Structures are given as C-alpha cells and as structure tokens.
Image: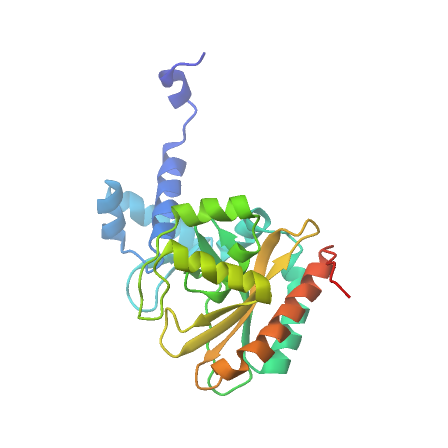
Length: 264
C-alpha cells in the first residue's frame, strides 16, 4: 500500500494548478479575471497568469469580449464530444440540421447532456435578417430549455428520476417551471409528443422546439432544436414545427442505428 508521501512524488504541481483553473472556469461560464481566479483558488497571481497565457496560446481559453475576463473556448468540445455522446452524432446531424434550417428558416442547434447541464455543440444559423445565434460551448439549464426537456424525457425512467431528484429549478420568469412535480408532468407530455417546447421560460421573447436523438439502443445521445423570436415562432405553429423537428431528429437517430417500431 502506497503512502501519501509516495503518491505525492508522482504529482505534477503545475498540471494540478492548471486543472483547478479549468474546473473553476467551467463553473463560471460568464468569465473570471486573473485576480479573481487567484483569490478563489488561493494561488499566486503570477501562476494564474502563466496558466492562462498557455491556455490562450493553445486556444483552450480566450478573453471575453465583454471584459469579464477569461472563458473556456469551444476547443474543449472536441475533447468532450466523444465522452458526452455518440462520436457520430454531429457527423450525421449536420446535414439534417441544414435541411431543417432551410425548411423553417430558423437557427438549428445540436447539443448533449454534460453532467447536470446541457451544452451546445453546433449550430446552423437561420436565414432571416434577425435570428438567434449561440456560441458552441454554451451550457444551459435543463428545466427551461427544449433540448434539456427532450433528452431527459427520453431517458430510462430510473435514470430520469435520479436526474430529477438532483436538479434545482431556478426561476427566470413567470413561465419557468420551478417544481419537480410540474417538471415531471412536462417530461411525460414531451415523451408523448416526441418533441419539447420552451415557451420563453428563460429568455423573454425566445421560443425553442427540440427533439431527442437516440442511438441504436434507444438511448438519448443528444438533441436538435430550433430557436426563434416568439413573434415569428408562434405557439399556434408549435405542433406543425414540432413534428418537423421530431422527424428530422428521428432521421439522425436512424443513421445512428436506432430502429423505431410504430403501430400501423
């Protein structure tokens, strides 16, 4: 049995500090300044500066344009995607996403579950003069986002319950679902429809409609969804557009080997 002192011999202090910085930035997607990181980690400012200089040079971090400091870059997604979902998800999703974008003219996105949040992997910008665009790597709450609802609704029941029991439900406006009971009902409804809806539950004036993408076992490996302003993506059109999103998600699922059995 190895002693603590013998284990310490194999530690790399610089790497240990860098990993602590990466984990801290992952917890603060809004960005952190060098002195803020130094204070939170109780590390010398010079050490943090050298780590951030290296991460920025290797394109794993970048300065946030709004002046809030450093944020992790999209390059981490190239490492996370094989872990977070099926490696073939994006490869098969992108052509289908482009067709869905051409059909709806709205921005189409793809994302996966990553721990207790969702994360955007890719987007196909809409064709309107005004359309929503999101930086890949953005993490989102599950309870107020169409893709989060879609992926959770497609999970096996026991796994879904574990998620629900560990979730928090922050309120963003009067439309946000803030209780486990109500969210469970929402997931059941999503499962019946085959698609999920975000009724501007986080961002005012933004509607989203999403559907889960399944692997050959029927397990959700991700989601695709469209997003647009509520004045254009109106509730009266949710059923029609929801069916389109669901059908395109099913096309990707079939490419990943999923076979659905529908009653004639």
